[in-house]
Amino acid sequence: MERKVKVGIIGCGGICNGKHMNALKNLDYVEIVALCDIIVERAYETRDKHNLGEVAIYEDYKELLKDESIEVVHVLTPNRSHSFITIDALEAGKHVMCEKPMAKTYAEAKAMLEASQRTGKKLTIGYQSRWRDEYLYLKKACEDGELGDIYYGRAIALRRRAVPTWGVFLNEYEQGGGPLIDIGTHALDLTLWLMNNHEPKMVVGTSYQKLGKQVGTGNAWGDWDTEKFTVEDSAFGFVVMKNGATVSVESSWALNIADPMEATVMLCGDKGGADTMGEVDLRLNYVKNGRQVIETPNFDCGGVAFYDGDSTDPEVLEANGFYQAIINDTEVPTKPEQSLVVTQILEAIYESAKTGKPVYFD
Image (cartoon, rainbow, N blue to C red; front, side, top):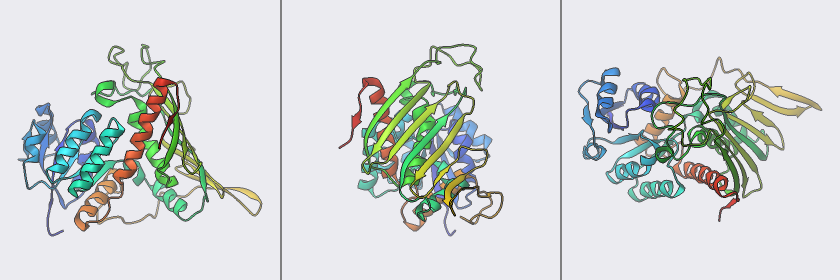
């Protein structure tokens, strides 16, 4: 590359250090020049942990946005602040990678999309599961019509006892919800993307806090603070699309199940079906010569060279796809219009659970 794309990071918590730093360090044409966090010590810790040298450190994200050399901003803050930070960054002339979900509410997400359209700056949302081998393969199968007309999908993100006990995950004000908006959002994004269907008609939803006040939980990260647990521990949705297709959404951080599944999808079409629920990465099923057949692709070898780098981690492929769209001025792979619909459905599930009534879309 003839130039380095200069990047600023806003939010230096777990998702920054666990996902985005790995992605950006694998792109040799990207240069991180600034870090920001309202707890400024975290920005210094991130700088030192990743040997970033003399990058600029900020406590106020608006000061970071004044740096005209920064071309791209990653918004990695709690969900409550996704919208206004993203809009400010777009208005400051930056392209934005915002972590999932797009926002707490549909109205906030719509304002983000409108800001991107108004400024001409690119916006994408961090749904890296799309870049996993099995989902890239399944997407191609769907596009080739191997499943036919896909009329039923399951979006599954079910943990048995894996409630995150750090940060603000349990805080409804900061996050907008619990497992549905945290991990259910990945499964729903995958399902709608694979079905190539982002036009919902109506939603019915339920949510529960049946286990959130319990102690002695056997949780993967130890018992949570029951006083701080202000979100659901599970939530479920039933979505009817405008073309008549049905999507079920299942999410939990804590649920009495034997077989947890996360970022998992099942699709049923009139020619075949597929799922990522078994012991292998992907199963495709259909009928051939009058016999039921199941195919299990081998992802241990082969594959596609997506870029001139060493890593094929989903977060690296996701970041590279976004940055190539910036460099070449092409469409971003994960379009904000699609992420907007995911947020619209999540909000509708919460609303239906609260009111006990269906939510209809125009």
